[in-house]
Image (cartoon, rainbow, N blue to C red; front, side):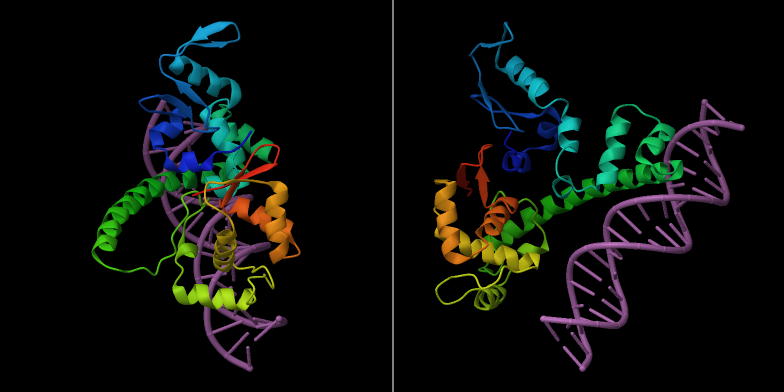
Length: 255
DNA sequence: GACTGCCTTACTGGAGTGAC
DNA sequence: GTCACTCCAGTAAGGCAGTC
């Protein structure tokens, strides 16, 4: 099933917990994007459901409980380590510390410590969200008032937005001249995250926004630029520049 | 006494940085 | 480009205090 991180990033906390978004037309599943139109009746396993019932049923049958789905996400997406994911899964299953410690292979005191750290993380996350929201409001006002223009435009589907996106024109120029030749071919794929983002952004200029490409078409373009084109293709997916279908045959350029 | 929350300390590995 | 160094996050464990 295709992961729909773009929709998740745009959802509120409440919507993420529920697993769906509601709009005028109906409900859409946050995890896979499937839509259920209000006023339409859906037949599922011989039973009839309205749109709300259908989306609830769909989430339960296809994604399980929200907590299970979120805990199945990649550690870099959800922001907690594998051990923490493991501990949270066992906690959500109602296991006590002794059992968790035994199953994970750590001491009871370590489980307690993780529990404490996770609570701290929760508090920090709340404050961080409030801070970022205030900052967003403040900076959007500032950008409207001045011509700053030095920060890299972040594509909406970027899987993680942090200081790596704080890219100046000088950074971009320097990285491109270092890693690409005058024909736009890539000499070497950078190791550093910030430089990768610059190079991938430059590569994306060869693709049209919102257009779908067959895998062969993507390969053809990337192959012209770099011999190890599968690495580029993977990176473009990983960094959220492309999304692809489950069978990996169709690639769509994200906005 | 058992359990839990909070805090501290120690160790480790990865990432970043500066000197050469 | 390489190497040494620093910093930081994650992990693990234990101690102390409060609650039941």
